[in-house]
Image 1 (cartoon, rainbow, N blue to C red):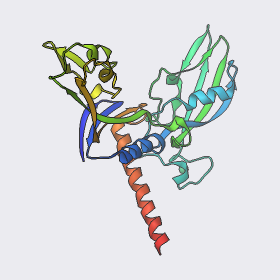
Image 2: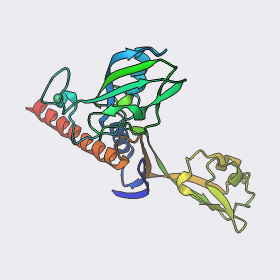
Image 3: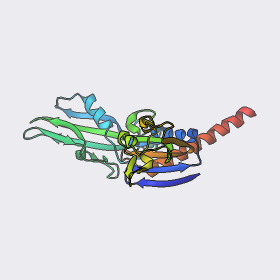
Length: 271
Ligand SMILES: [Zn+2]
């Protein structure tokens, strides 16, 4: 297996992975979506709400606000030694909000949430939670905990996790008359003219839609699109709760753990 990093920043990771197959790529994708834990608000105690939104709607909005996650400092409630319904300081973080509009209408943003652990804060302080008119108040206590995307989408650490086959584009100089039809039709601008010849400008952008092949008036076609059977482009976009490379590392760890459990079960069955 060979991994090449194409792009890496705070929220995005793009890799070319070769020497693997679809089942492995798909397993990793599903682990990232459904099994890698992240922090989200799961319970809200309303102390005062004189706004026009119902308590449930506000709680839902708070739940969907991405929170910076500390996977090493906190336990999943089901794995925590406290086994308490209310949680302990190893499996729960309390955030409070005390907002009021004294003059005119104002928007309350996620940045006004005060966390007992400064590490567990909203990823962005500009997520609008509610609008308050003059004299309206919102006071609440929210409890965040680790959870998994398979139980609720608010715990998904990724906003996108996809893979595609690695494309292979072949332009046959014998049949291609450089009519530029394929260049014009490509929605991803993969092709470009260079010295009056069709050229591949951005191979990785190709999504194998085949529009260029259809647009080619030549017979046989002057352009051929294929894909490598064992190479993929993997894109991970984090919601900001965890760095994307950490999400991938956790996904591989969880897959490994699940396979080991499976192996153990098979051994037991054989006895
Ligand atoms: Zn606990």
